[in-house]
Image (cartoon, rainbow, N blue to C red):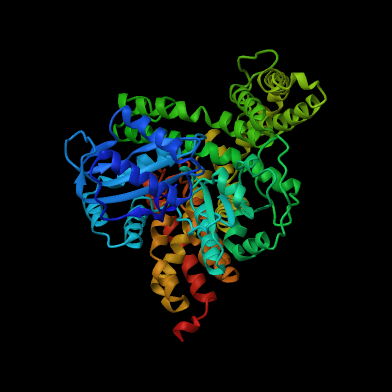
Length: 639
């Protein structure tokens, strides 16, 4: 939640001159009332004074931040006041306070803690405080804060200025990885809202968690909500509101159309059924079964990624340490030296959660919290290989077993929930804490003990098949996987190839992940090279943004190529596919391996045959660049 979104011009007073702390509090409370978010002035003041009795909220350095949670607060808000001559606010350093912020927060939530933390972070900058004190009017005061927030929190989109009655349109954006699509969709929707003159606020469910979170008051007051997401987001809060559920890519491609549909009333009323929070499918709101499966899978993958990436990189570091130390590459490789053993042990702790978390979040996406239990337990049983004869573990079914536990277990739990709807209402209180957990655990326990042996055989068969592939077949597989990474750059094809690579790592096949990652690195780098060496094929803005793709490509963020692909898909996408397929095939041909499932250039030291891997990346990127140069004509701006 951004500070400038909570601070209105009416709640700012510059160059004030209160004579005492109590007078300063009264002035700030009056500013809060002017802001329009205080229902009962006296009740709110009582909360402020109660907090001050516990200790002064003046923190020194001329700063005071009185705050209170109260039923009298209609919506989170701020008031601000500058006091050039200072006022004795009983600060710890006994110095007068000349910069005062007052936080008002409703009882439901801890928004005041988030705002307090952010305020304290940016107010530690002395130059920033001086700029606030020098502000000539409220507009300049807000601009100083806005500029600082954009500098400190660059990944968080700013909200449009709200109307008197709140935001007309609200939106939520989310993609499986929460790196690029999430914020691109948010930016596109905000720009479209500004162009159309419609106030809009966008909540982003990115890799760092939800930001700019929609409040209950904003939801109640808005005309409708756009949910542009490819993974599960919280939907129960939108019950009874008009909601458009769509893909995150539609938020990027057709933001104006989505906003206009909300304003025209062309959106169905969302009714939450008490089951799993759902998110997206299409603008027609008729979610196909295949799309549902993809959404559930991506919810599992996105939550699994932190465990996979962090654990994988720690294990890769362990191999690197043993390699530098000259340890023998035997079955204990990565554990010979003490430092290597430490990294590998810690990495394994995280890695062990990979399969249960995948299954757990697939189950959660399908059947809400009861499905989470079923998925996690089923995933753990898949990893251990539980059977009826040996429930402690015998035939691990790994990645495939986790998918089965998540999907089938989730849907069986959903059936259990619906069957329990026929029970007497008196039992509603014990269903989520007793009936669902017991029934769900029994279902997944029986299911996984029955299918683990079969899934284990399939898993071993897939591993043996990959190991037995000849060189020519492996090169073809590398070309296919590399090309898939560039087809939709973060979409279903891209994620399918990535998930296959991660699954291969868990089975000890490390060359597949190498081909997948190098294929994903090529599109942004190829575009960056093209904007550097063939400038006349691109607009001025595309040339200006081109160098950023060097960084994104080297960091294995394929989504950096999306704006260029969206602007000219017929030429950019085929070029990227050919370049990525070339790199993937060469990586396979050289026998390159990768034990870490992410990291880009930062994990190159742990790549098997690193020099050849760099060559594969370079050749693929150059091939993609040359195809772009051949297919794209000189841009009219450069004629």
